[in-house]
Length: 306
Image (cartoon, rainbow, N blue to C red; front, side):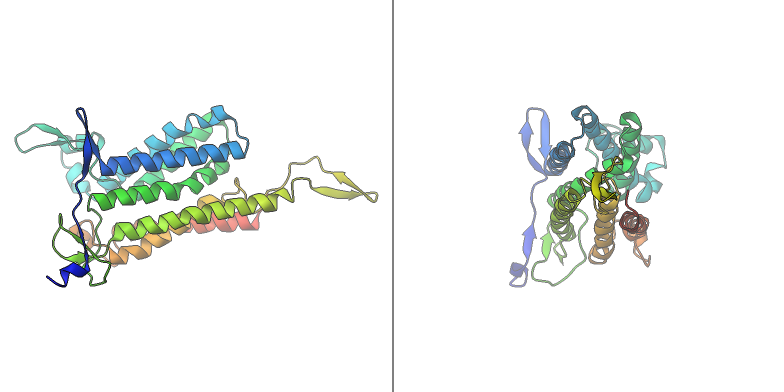
């Protein structure tokens, strides 16, 4: 008993309260806060870059649907394909937030299972469709979304913490959590590790953004020598290698999040039993392509300026 007192006993209710017939849950609220925070941050970025308001309006719908659909399908197809593809009933559960009970009745459960890798892929597809509609540069859109992404990711992991899900491996570190809804073992709070890291990444992204603005301002009026006089060029002003629109922020956020995700998996319990004997678990395997894409985008932005 004395040993247990050294750890953090974690057993919060998943429910915040009730608003009439609606049940407010921590996980859903964290998603809402994360999406709303990203919404206002990207809106500020658009205004700061003098992008028209009417081009911003549809961005929220595209992003929200892309993340939600991608994250849900990612979980179902990457982690539980044997269940969700085994029958028509289970296939329906993949798309609708309901579950069929043993007596044949249906129960509203919310989307119990969302994968960050699927959400990232879904967001990319949604932004591609958004760019086709608005005719905005895909790299400009991807970079702006990338700057706000760590904020949403942080809130989602806090939601996982409130649900006592995606738990860590047993450990004896003094900051271990005892997830009473799971078992009585002290475990790594893997969700909290990720939330703290993503929170720090927000400031990394904003630091690079402010830095690029200062360096870019020195290039706003590029000149060339013409018979001993400085004459303004008529070409478009160049972008610094870390300016929005080069793909640098898109590459940076992928590299930061999924590199951290790859290594933090070593402290987390496997989500499905079949992962136990794998050299790298599913989360790590799915992180590798995103890391490669991220590094490539950063190198491309650094080596080639528009």
